[in-house]
Image (cartoon, rainbow, N blue to C red; front, side, top):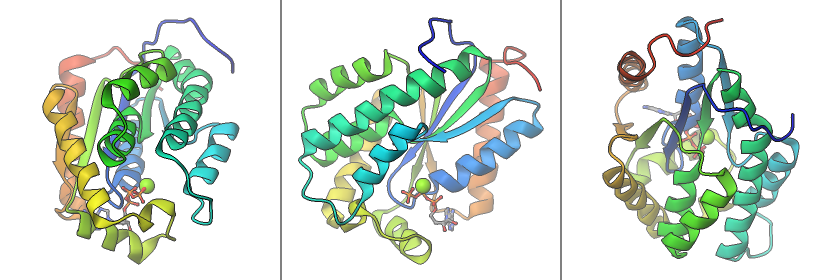
Amino acid sequence: MGRTSRKPTGIFITLEGGEGSGKTTHARRLCEWLRTQGLKVLHTREPGGTLLAEQLRNLLLDKSAETIAPETEAWLILAARRQHVDHVIKPALADGMTVVCDRFSDSTMAYQGYGRGLDLRVLETMNDWATGKLVPHLTLLFDVPVAVGLRRRQQTSSQNRLDREAKRFHEKVRSGFHALARREPRRITVIDSAQSLESVTQTVEELVMNWLKTHHAGKSRRR
Ligand SMILES: Nc1ncnc2c1ncn2[C@@H]1O[C@H](COP(=O)(O)OP(=O)(O)OP(=O)(O)O)[C@@H](O)[C@H]1O
Ligand SMILES: [Mg+2]
C-alpha cells in the first residue's frame, strides 16, 4: 500500500507507557475485546509495523549497537513512523478499521524529549512532519513505578538497549508521560497498571466502551 489521500474514518487508539508497563499485553487483550464488539481491528506497534520500520526497530533496540546520539535515535524513530503512518495506519483508518498501536508519538516526546533532553518544540515539529499531523483519537497511558515495570520485564523478556538505561532515565520518561497527560487530558487517560492484570483489563474495556459510546457510536465499519 502506498500514500493515501483518503480521509481517515476509523478509530486510532494508542497504548503508551514505560518499560514493562503492560502495553503489549493490553494491546493484545484490547484487540480481542474490540473484535468481540464487531469492529475490524488492526494491531500494530512502533517502532515497526512495516518491513523497513521493523529493520529500524532492530537497529534501535540492539544492545550491542555503537553509542547512538539522541538526535540519531529520534531521526530513526521518526523515519520508521513515517513509513508506518503512510503504509499501514492511514490506509487502515481510511478503510474504517480500528487501529490499535503499541507506542506512538507520545513515546517520542517522553523518551527522546523528557528522557534524553532533546528540545520538545523541535521534536514536536519533527514529529508532525513524520505523522502528517495524525493524532490518536484516544491514548491509554499505562503507568507503573519504574522498579515494578523493569522487574516485570526482567522476568519475561530479553533485555534490550533501553533496559540498560539508568533508573533516573526511566523516572524522567515516566514524569514526561505524566506531563503529556496533563497537557492533553481529553486524549490521554492514565491507567494505574500496578493493579492486577484482570483489574487493568476491566478498566481498559470500560474506558474504551464509554469512549466508543460517546464518540463513535455506529461510525466504524462492522465486520
Ligand atoms: N497488571 C499486571 N500485573 C502483573 N503482571 C503484569 C501486569 N501487566 C503486565 N504484566 C506482565 O508484565 C510483563 C511486561 O508486560 P508487557 O510486555 O505487556 O509490557 P510492555 O509495556 O509492553 O513492555 P515493553 O516496554 O517491554 O514493551 C509481562 O510478562 C506481563 O504479563
Ligand atoms: Mg511491549
